[in-house]
Amino acid sequence: MRFDKTILLIIIGTIVLYAIFLFVPDFNLIQEKISNFKINYLPLILLLVSASWIPVILKWHFLLRTCKIEIPLGKSMAVFLSGMFFEVTPGKIGILMKSQILKTSSNIPRTKTMPIVLVEKVYDLIGAVVASIIGIIILGMEPYFIIIGILVLTAIFFFMYYTPAAELFFKRITKAKFFSKYVSNMSEFYQTIQKSTNVKIATICILLAVVYWFIVSAAAYYVLIGFDIHVLDYLKVLAIYTTSTLLGAISFIPAGIGVTEGTLTGLLTLEGIGISTALILGIMIRLLTLWYSAFIGFIALKFTGAFSFKKDFLKE
Image (cartoon, helix red, strand yellow):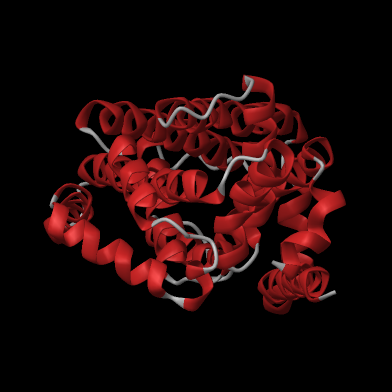
């Protein structure tokens, strides 16, 4: 199936990419550095990554409730976790899958849930920008980085709250061949967007997104500690991790694979960490954040029944 091949190709491509990153420079040196990782930090790192899901699950469930979609918290959590698996797939499938799961398992129209998925991703982006700006200020980096971040936030809020711009933006999206199949009622689609983006709801969701980035960045920080690297404090790691993830997202490559790892490596070397060590750190951080989350998402798919309707999803 095309779906299975896509997943398989992404995983194989990632393995090859990581192998090139790690073993081409100096296999023996890389092997020695990996063996120095203090395994006792692994449970703490995985605990922090798992804890980081709590605020974004609450954000997801809060948005569903705001739009009058009443499902049990446990089911909402399972749907959200299953969506993490599709973070490593091309964006089209990743965006739609949670909506498809809710439609198939609970008969909730995609018109009601697709805008929630889109808005949720926007809040994640805003949270990353805000967290990155906080870290950049602490880092004392060039002011233009902060200016860029503020401009990005200004553009996002402009399209969220200036009605003519928002309507034009979403009309453009829903006219695209891919999205037009899933948005049958533009009025209902836009009403859901409006419900999800009023100032009170936006403030709560953005704060929850920022909390997520602070927690997951703590996991990245302890990856460095696990390799006995203490040259960076937590807030510097926050800036480096969020900035790298943002650049990966902007690349539109599935999960920013290659771009995020490369940016992590580059920013870590700028802080005085050797290139081989920075390569290991970049890949280890991604393995223990992105790929651990994707693995848990894959397990969650079983509990949402996604495996049983995958063929139907592809036919639609």
